[in-house]
Structures are given as C-alpha cells and as structure tokens.
Image (tube, rainbow, N blue to C red; front, side, top):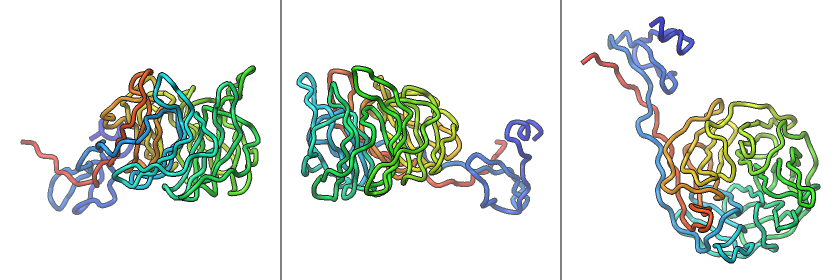
Length: 328
C-alpha cells in the first residue's frame, strides 16, 4: 500500500460498502465485503460507420453533433481541386445537400450547435485569405460582419451567436503565423487577448466566447480560454494539425490528423489520453461533437491524392463500474 500511495498520491481509502465517490481507476477497501475494489469503465469507446457525404472533400468546415451535423466548403476531390461552396446536413443516418455557401472556400473555421445553426469565418482562397463571415439559419447562408483580420488555416470555438477565432495564417506575399484572437457577440468581431503561442492548423473545443480550448496545430501546446486570458495546460500526446475535434473545456475529443493518422485522444479537463483509433486514418478532415463521449468525423484525406466521403461516429466509454480484486 505504501507503493500505491507513492504512485497515486493518496492512501487506499476504507469504506463500508461500495464507494460511490470513487473516480475511474481508484482503489479502496470495502470493509463490509472484506475485499479490495476499484472503479473501472465497463466498455471501451468505439468508432462506427455513419452515412457517407455526397461530395468528397477535405480542408472544409464542420459543426454540430453526430445526430445533427453540418459540412460546408472545402477542397474537392483531386486532381481538379476546386474550392467548394457545397453544404450538406446530417440527421444521424444520411447526408443531404442543402443551400451552398455564398463564397466557395477552404481552410475556414466553423462552429455551431447543430445542423440548424452555424457560423463560418475566414478562409484561404489561394493566394489570398478571407475575412468573410457567414451565418447559417437551417435553410440558407447569410453574409454578416467580417473578421478584423483576414486569415486561413485556423480555427474557432462556440456557437452561431457567441464564438471565438484564434491563430491562423495571413495571406502572401508575407505569410505570417498568427496569435491573434477575435471574439464574436452575434453581431460583430472584437479583437481580444492573443494566444500565448501563435499557430496554424489548430483544433478546438468550447461552447461560447468565454470558454474554449485551442489545441495543438503547428505546435504541441494546448491553451485554455476563460473569457479574458489564455493559460497553457497539458499537451496532446501526439502533436498534429488538420484534425477533427469537439467538446468542451472539461470533456473534449481530437480525431485523426495529418499526415493521415487514426489516433484519437480524449480530454477529461486535466489531461489527454489515447483511446480507440479511427477505422480509417485521415488528415484534413472535419468534425465536431458534444464531449469526449459523442463525436463525428467526416471527409478528409486517407492519402494526399484522394479525398474521402466516409463518416465515422464516436461513442465513448461506458459508465464506471465497481470491480472486486480477487487473489485466485
């Protein structure tokens, strides 16, 4: 038991019966049963196959949940590689083509609660970057107020009425990696506190412009936003960009990444943990989700010369259960 205390930081607790306050992996002694017990997860998280996109794409925008998602813009199937304005809506089973973006684009940011309410902002339309913002009302896209700084290869978090944009790249002829952050109040963008570490190709989690994560990208650093400042927290186990992500500041998911990876990591509010791989390794994909128990990933590249229509849906680990340690 002295070794357990040294490794875990606390002694094994004595409890009369099941210890309902135990966290995953915690060990205690059940004095009623006369046995050691611990809290474990009943099932591992798993990926399943969802309905395929109608249009293969990568470097696009995504928002919503695994039962109500939106895919928009991006880069079409090589070798033609046109920028796309196509928008598709997901109902948990299949994708349906709906009204296009006003401007075809790629490398944009996208946020939204579901397939009826979303926001996309910025983009790269080589060789320029865009400041355009478009708002989705469930039927069509409307142009609203621009970002203060045009940028592409970046991300943001939040919903249609309350969002935050961070990092990215300014356009040539003097491309610059940015730490700039802007906050959206449903009407306009305001410049606010910069990231501690400038970056491109990052991913995100967060519910509004007061609570967000900026994850990895061209650096391994994860930063947390509290509405006024950024704080560096624990890094991903495998730094990467061009991934799918979603969730909140206390429960998030990062999926895939470039070069094509199948890696999935869960965030529990403190640290990242590697979990079950995607069925298909991919980078440059789009995705979102409620938290680390429910997510969706779609499109992307399995190899650089081929875009995907494939969708995968994430169901997280089961509820914690109590197990008894036996000596036989």
